[in-house]
Image (cartoon, rainbow, N blue to C red; front, side, top):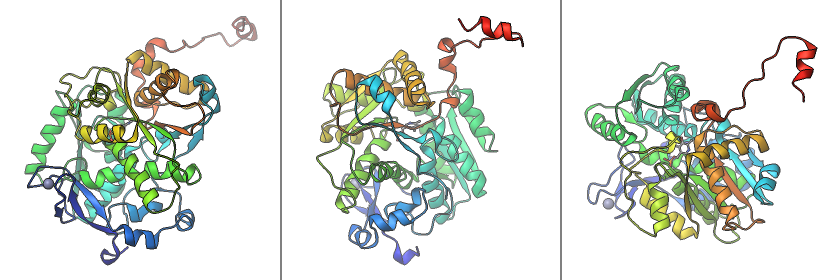
Length: 413
Ligand SMILES: *Cc1c(COP(=O)(O)O)cnc(C)c1O
Ligand SMILES: [Zn+2]
């Protein structure tokens, strides 16, 4: 793709619709609305078909006309196309006949869906000529930014709340990035990063590159539809931190429908999943409020979702409402039970965020809010080996024996 053949028109304000050049910008100067990438859909529809997509390699760049680069990607070339797993045993346990898990616990290279957004953001950072990248992270974003920056030879700064899980911290420091633990919540980290971005000429993947970064999440939704046999799912249960992934799954479905790549049999209902200890978007949806009330002191084992003042909260709540879905805020006990249930029925070990979506699915199915025979996808966005701490208390103890057959036989009872 040369600059001339780009399908990306501009950045456009979500609120007042003013256009901006394709630079490292994220807020509208006139109304302070967030900027979003605008595409030339007439041109995309001339270029894309199911057959063309299917002939391409199995990574997120098979949808490149719908991703926000002007040049060919240079970072994260092998990211994406994770399995959509048909879950018979989890379905039986929850009373559902057509249940799927979209499994980004095995996304390359850092085992979360953040590899999608980072490969897009770092490719864009390089296009724009940056040599240093940075991010504010609840854990997974730091892992992915550091790993992809290492491969791309970019300098990298990652700022995180200082009290993240050990697996998330070592999973960033190992790549040689400067990792800074901030004494505060994610919202404190994020505020600090906005200030740093004002002083240092760095590409902050989720601050000044946020419009490009966020578009990477659409690939998760494109894959779900392609892997369902070019169908839209009837129901999708989505974890929410800033709320961005949920809005981009909605956008991915709108785009595939608009381009005629899928047939939509009715609207896809979106269900937002959060932890009770930090569920500002879910609470607004459940209360029928438009405004998001920030959570000052998040308190949950689902640290990857613990954003008290979510940037895309109002848009996520609006997308849920427009789809006819709802939200849930589940307890830490339900999260652990959800992690265990998915592991024991499907052999998939997810992190706390996946426990949140499984627990939300269980609540919605128990309440018959989701019909048992309509295609339903649970989003599993991260890997369990990174968040082992909350499982220690309920883990099965190791059965230790002497190296003798009688010792083994004696424990079989
Ligand atoms: C970041 C993250 C999310 C949600 O991201 P948003 O787009 O900010 O809502 C979900 N799951 C995991 C594991 C994450 O790391
Ligand atoms: Zn505006």
